[in-house]
Length: 212
Image (cartoon, rainbow, N blue to C red; front, side, top):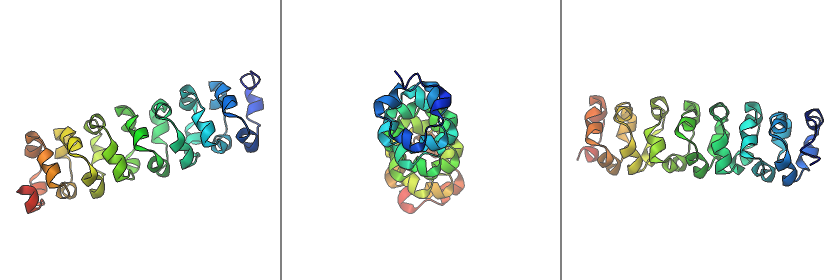
């Protein structure tokens, strides 16, 4: 009750050591407005247990600068419901190191609009496990700009179900280097309309095993 009744002006002067000393129950008791008022240094001082104690509304209230200043371990500590509470602006401002630190469960918790809020610089650093863990719904809704920056390793990591879920327009937008690394199983997963949409240069660059 004392913590939840703290004036914001009193809270923002707390040192990082004082913030770190707060119990998870005290963190959970903070008002959303108080969480929004946290300084970047205070947010960065939160332990992983304190991070997990934040309400979803609190997570949504975090400033983008606060999130960007958090350590990768703090980002990795978010629950799937906390990740789902993040807004598109917050997600777009996560650093590439923070994106890599996210688990496949955290990424699959994102709605399609949230996933598409990630920029190309964020997509290109996704690990092969993160890419393979995306749902078919997420894959089918990917912005073409994000898809075309995927590396050869990322494309090769896609499951056959993910390949089959690609929109025909997305298949048509694949680069020749991306098409060339498709496994024979991935090639067979393409819909007939997808095959028809392949550029002639893409087909010409395919290996004989892919054509066979």
